Length: 153
Image (cartoon, rainbow, N blue to C red; front, side):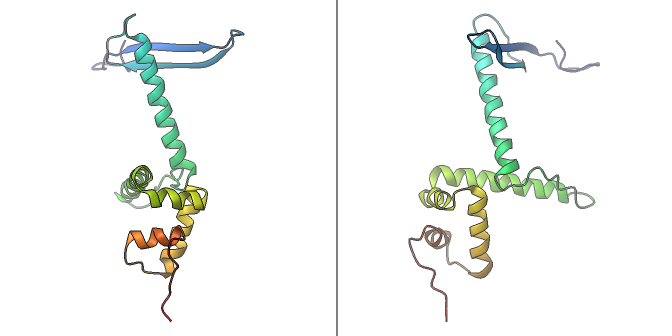
């Protein structure tokens, strides 16, 4: 089927998935378009991949909206490119934080102590507004109470 109306539309295959509970009530319904051939041998795998992708996208956008990245704001400031620059910086921050959460023990510990990403961002902002840290490590050791914040007299 064509992906959209009109000449030059990309041709795609379409499938719909519907999951019901023991009472026969629909608990999940979705449809997916793909350029992969769909047949009886691969339809279950394609549906599972579509559900996994939907879950990943949904969770990512949820984090961007409510976990301190303020992506519900459209950044429509400026005359030409400012909105795109601000949105790009926001997504880069999200990518950086996600990688840090996967590989950096102090980052995960600081998040656990703060309780939420928003709380962590607030503490980062509070500290870095008044103190110049010699390294990221010193900042995160301070956030996780591994070292005391020694302010000059």
